Image (cartoon, rainbow, N blue to C red; front, side, top):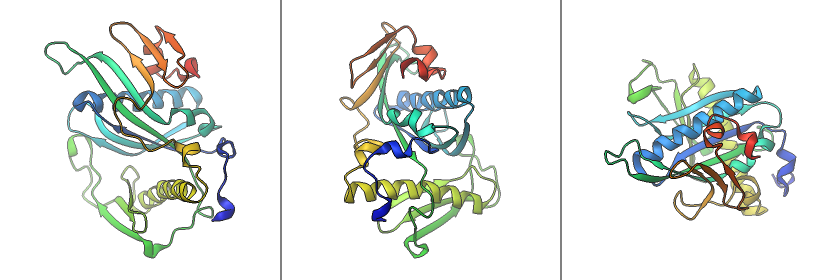
Length: 247
């Protein structure tokens, strides 16, 4: 594995990616924000002509999601999306507030290049595999057979899952792809200290850790928290998938 470890993430620029979104501090607003981000990346992928493949969407039974993992396949996907790694902050009038109060929500975006099987071999005996029924919105079972797959990598305790594919075999393959990416990142962190280069430091999904702020009230602005750069009056366009406006 030592020969696979690289110190510069530019070698992954042409790779497809596993993109995950996790709702953070903010309750229902944060879960709604996570769903808004998922839509933003889906619209961006459509504009780029990329394939957008849902792997698992954790529906909360009402408006919003607690988390999601998708694969995005196309030209230079990792190069285009790697700077999305980090906490994203939304400021708006909460649609869940009867008093129409302003609310701040957070969600974490994780972008990992897809790692091939020969780059990160995984031993079958290191896996704990569980099958379950795929579910739709609100947790309703949409299949009577257990096609969804959850895999735990025992040496690292990393857990991944996939439920969007038609067969158990396909879900297992997708879950293994995600697992390889996560283990590869961990291996780099431990051996080459390059986790920060590929996915950013592990942070709490809350105030003080955001990389970008999207403000819809009392004015409309996007702010890059790393550079201080600001964009006025294009928030809706960006959230509709025009990410190139702030690239």
